Length: 578
Image 1: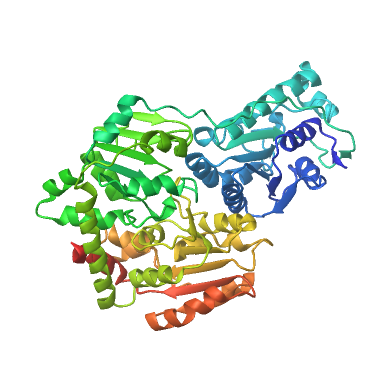
Image 2 (image 1 turned 135 degrees about the horizontal axis):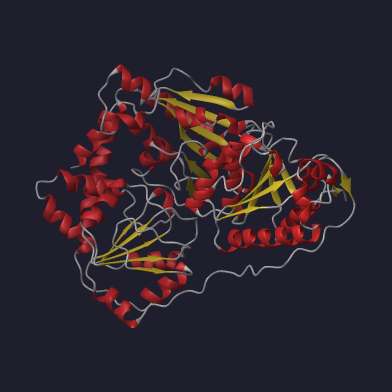
C-alpha cells in the first residue's frame, strides 16, 4: 500500500483510519496531493471527487446526516477552503460532525506574494468546534527550510510529530464527543507527490465515549409537570425515529398537552399540531387576541430537537412566556424564547420515560379547545383550496397529497420549507432541511450527498433560486437513478413578496425578488436528468405520478407558478381561516 512520504500526511491518514472515518470527499488540487494520494491508495477509505468545494462540503454534510458519523472533506490551499464556510456554519449550528482537512503552503510563504496562498489558520474561527493548525515537518524538504526559514529547524521532527498528534487528538475528541465540525490545517512543502510503503507511527488513543449520561428529573419536577394544566411540547428539526412513538402517543393522549411539531420534526400523531402558524395567525387577527393568547400560553414548555422554522411561535413564546422551559437532550440548548430554565442532557427517550411514564392524565380544556380550532382551520383550508387559482399554495397541496410512499424528502429553505408546514406529511416520509443557518446555498448538494447512503429514494423539493444557485450539486458521478427534484419556479425570490418592504417597484423586483426567466430544461439535459414540467393544475395532476414513477434515470419536475399572485393567495389563506 502506497502512502505519502511526508510524515504529517501519514499520521493524519492513519488517525482517520484509527477513528473510523471512512468517507473522504476530495476536491482537486496540488497542495493536498500528499493526503489525496494516501486516502485514495488505501482500500479502507471510500473517496468521492467533487470539484466545487462549496458543493463538496454540503455533499459531505448530507452523507454525515445519513451515516450519523463524521465525514471528511479535503481541499487544496488558498481560496478553496473559504468555499467550505457555508457548510461548516450549517454543520456547526446543526451539530453535524464534519472533518475539514485543508492543505496549506508552508508558513514562511504566507504573505510574501506566493500564489494560491491566504491566512488559513483559524479561518473558521467563530463557527468551528476546534481548529488544529499543524506544524510543518522538518525532515521533509529540509534544504528548502534551511534556505528560507532556518529558524524552523530549531525544533526536532519528534517534537513536531508530538505536537501534531496532540492537536489532532483534540480535534477528533470534539468531532466525536460534541458532534461539531472541526478543522485541521496542514502545511506541506514541495515535493508533494512522493510515496513510500512505510507505516506511519501509532496515533494516541482518545476516549470517544460516548453519549453523556442522562440527567434525572427530581420529584418536584415530575410533580410540577403532573399538576400543570397547560403543557406545551414544541419539537424542532429532528431525525426520523429519534423519539420513540410510545412517548408521543402517551403525550398526545394527555388533555393538558398540546404538541406543536413541524414537517422537519419527523413526528406523527393525529393529535399533533403540525401547522403552527395556522393556529397563531388567527389569534393575531382576532378581536380578542389577548384572551386567546393567554389561553394558549403554557405553564410549562418542553422542547427537544433542533431549530424551529415558525417565526410566529418564536414571537408568541417570547411575549407569552411559560413559567418554566425545559429543553431535553442535545449537546446544547438554545434560549430561543428567552425563558430557558433548565437543559437536561442525555437521551430524550430516557428523559421522557422518567417524566411521563407514570403520569396520570388530569382534566384540562387545553388540548380540547385548541383541537377544535385546528379542525376549523383544516376545514377552511379544504374550502380555500377549491376556490383559489393555480399557485404555489395549490402546487404544494398537490405535491404532498401525492407523496404517500417511503421516501427521503429534502426541503430547501425560504418559501419551500414554509409552505411545507401548511400541509400534512405522510408518515413514511423522512424529512430533512438545513435549518442550522437556513441558507438556500447548499440544499441540492446536501440532498445529493444524503442520497448516496439513503435506504429510500430521495426527493428534493426546492425553489428556483435555490436550485439555480446550487446547480453544481449535480456536477458529479454520484447521482442515483432514483434521485428526483421538484422545482417550484415562480420567477424569483417569492418569499420577499410576503415580507415587510414589498412595494412592487422595479428596484424591489431587481434587487430583492431578483426576477428571472430561466428554466431547468438545459441543466437537466446537461446532467442527464429526465425533464417533466407543469404550468397549471391539470398538467401537474397529469404529470406528477409519471414523474414519481420514473425509474430510468434521475428526474426533475419543474412547476411554473404565477409570480405576482402567489403572495396574495398565501396571505389571503390566513385571512380566510381567521
